[in-house]
Image (cartoon, rainbow, N blue to C red):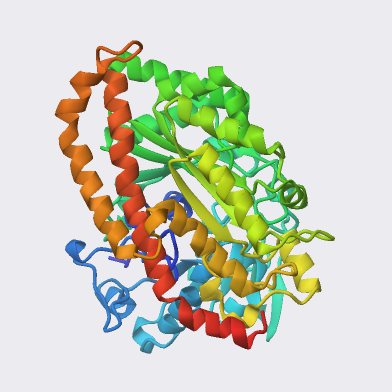
Length: 545
């Protein structure tokens, strides 16, 4: 019998300090699974497997090399792949993506794949790096519309000239094909799935993933964003899966045992009418089937909190955690970002509190030190603005990042034109934890770096003993223990008070218990980052930043 060809698609490891590495051990990149699923459906007799280096477990008998990285030599010896696909979506993972390409190209001839395909935002914006490393093709934008055609052409040594939205080398020259069918063109030269085909996207087949433990299923309804934030790479107009089709997908995943979901949409309420429709359907299904264990984490605009009826519906549907991109509380920075939200400090605080009042766990995301033309504020004043917000709004968890200029964004173009991007530091530092550009004067990169750590330490440590960091961790452990054993006592004591029910009393206890655990973990991450920062600070010194 003829051998069935194998397509292995790989999500490379993030840099070692990436803030998402721990979370990634519970979930999977939806893009990875989407491309694997599309290839599996589009090509008969094609075998497909997906490997996430970020969710890759020894207990699943995954092979590792001497550097404790996934061992692709063993993978290729055990099950030789004819075509390799690599996601270079996150800039921080680009060095590992390049390393994997070179690794497969260095294998013995009998183990080398026939072709290597690379996709993702970073690769699409900087394709030459990946072609020079040994990739055959770079896909610009969504691979799903053309993946079947592309793999078929590569397997048969066919012509690539008719395939939309790809770059490749021909006769020693780099060629970039246009998008021939304009329905599939989003941003210039980048592929999208058009609105009329969103319901044709197959449900993600997580059964194609090897060596992973997936407890949180990523799902997507809306691709693209109507916001025009200067620092964001997502600029394509939003297209949405219909509410009925989307709910069908959730039910399928629920039947497979998934109970926790992460909605990867940049703005879940982008299509408000459709958002309300699917929430209503899920809420009715939960009530009819008496489903209690169903939790969604979403990304949402701060301003959604103005619609309190919508917040109530979200709670009924099972949304428990909301990641809110506040980004900044300094009006001049919000204006420079072109962030579509209020710039009123007090309203920002009130809206975060509204999210909490409706029972949501709030994860607030902030960017410290965003560049603003013709605006000067010293580092101490910026810290005061941010800390005053954190004290007043009291979000459950926070994420304060350094601005990371992303290739293909307006912010990148502006800073590059001013020679302020520190690309010589290496892409591994493009993770939001490290300052990789020259900030606005009078600030320096080192000051911004230290300010971000200071704010996060104050929030996640007991800041009155800020410099005794391991003492903070011990206190967290004691607090977790006290809260845990207090449930049988606090719960009945709370019931006689007006407005309290057994459910509300438990929710109040659970918020305290959950937040203490999360903050203890975040405190450890901050300590780990700080411990490794001296080498990076030396690099900033050398860069005169």
